[in-house]
Amino acid sequence: MTTSTSHQDERRSAILQAAFKLFGQAGYAKATMKDIAAKAGVAQGLIGYHFGTKETLLVEAVREWMINKGMKAAFAELDLHGSPAEILERALLHVVKFRKENPEWFTLLITLWTESVNNDKLAAELRELYMEMKSGIMVILDRMELRMERRDQETLASVIQAVFDGLTLQAPVPLSTEPISHEQVSLGIGWLFEGVRTTAQPKGEPNHE
Image (cartoon, rainbow, N blue to C red; front, side, top):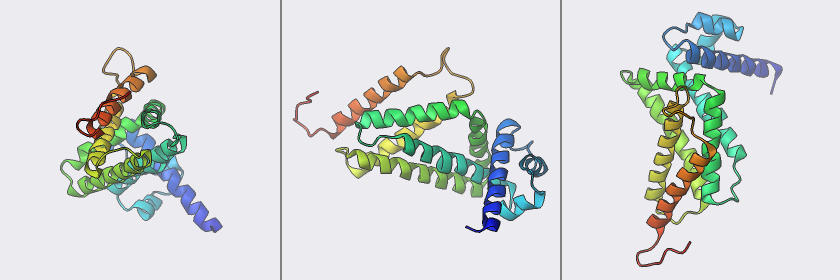
């Protein structure tokens, strides 16, 4: 990598970091390109050079934290030699930790959801992001060697995605008096995989624990 390319990557990363903070703190509508450029320490024209539009910057900021940072960091923490329940428990605990350490993530993701309602381009980008995320979850499920049909694995991946989204929604203002705990996550995972074992078990075969 040349010095010039490295410098370009650094400035692009600085813009994404600034967008993440400002979109997450002030909201998409209030955060201006000028403000983002100032926080990133770059000329405003560089945002247009790297991302084109504010909409694209929003999408790329979400992709950076959902896929490039969040999912990769989660994969790095997983011990794929553990049981399916242990693997999924670690993944969900990573999500809980990530949401708590990055409160801006809630506003950022909610912004993309709401902005995509009346914007076909953003809606398509959002669907693509979720497809990328689901593909990553499917990679983990494949390595678990679950006794499930492919269609059922895809359904399980969608359920796990829904759990991730639920944890995001609970991040800023817990829906209960106490944030979800490690014990609650473990209990929920146990219920989930008990259902998976029951579904995968051939008819007439006894359920041995």
